[in-house]
Length: 393
Image 1 (cartoon, rainbow, N blue to C red):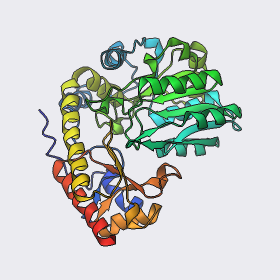
Image 2 (image 1 turned 90 degrees about the horizontal axis):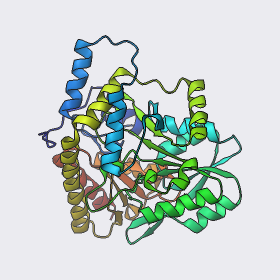
Image 3 (image 1 turned 30 degrees about the horizontal axis):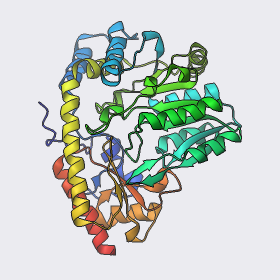
Image 4 (image 1 turned 60 degrees about the vertical axis):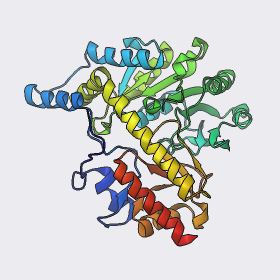
């Protein structure tokens, strides 16, 4: 069984998380603790590593086509974990989820169309919308009882204007870790159907849902929504294999599928490397126990953070994540915002976090912390965060 307390030193491995600190945070401090970008410090599951080693040693690395077993591993995973019935024909491949969103944007919207996202929302959504020169229409999330909720009245008011053609949903939510309930998803899907808005459900974090919550894939909703619905998924987040570049677009409507495939053809966007295919299949077909052990470890890290904030920083508001390994807290007591706040944590606390303005305009004093690392690193990061509050308050 993997010992998640033992993590590698990832310095000088071309790790974006660790070797990218100087470019991202402007610091060459060797003691700067990376708790920012959403990848984990854990080794992949043994079956993934063994499959990749076998590929490299025993096979020719020529052009590769996805096998039936590859597709079946995804079909079985979504059926067993999320009660979704998929066929091979429902699955389109893509190097990554953000690229998939780009392909869908080009397939179903025009340059004058609006695309709605929440605020805060994963900054990858914002970047791909800006790159495609679409109008970004934001729906601010509301915090109620310590969790994000959607403002359906505001969403409908924007839909009525007729500009919004696509809604990109993070399900579960990044950065807030919210697991949307079936009832919440139905409300949103009803609005999308009523106003002719396509809905993307980005479910890359769905397999990082903690036991007390029930994640709902959008494809378990009524089939009446399927003509306007797409689901995005990948093993890369849950199994820490982002570097192999493999993801899927699930789409059941044939006309919508044709539009996306045509766009992918224009961009040569659907080819996946041999390593991505092999690693993904090994993840879904052979690494279920590893994923359960990982989730248990992350859950303990999550509780450590919650307990620490409650005991040592009781004045600080935070959202306890229902999924993901991302912790969202409000550092307003420090008296800074955005990049200045981020720089304060970097320079004074030697901890690299992401400031809330990366995810929208509504969260200038909030910070995102990645706790997918060893317990020792999490505790050290918490101590450094507290030292920053102590210096300012």
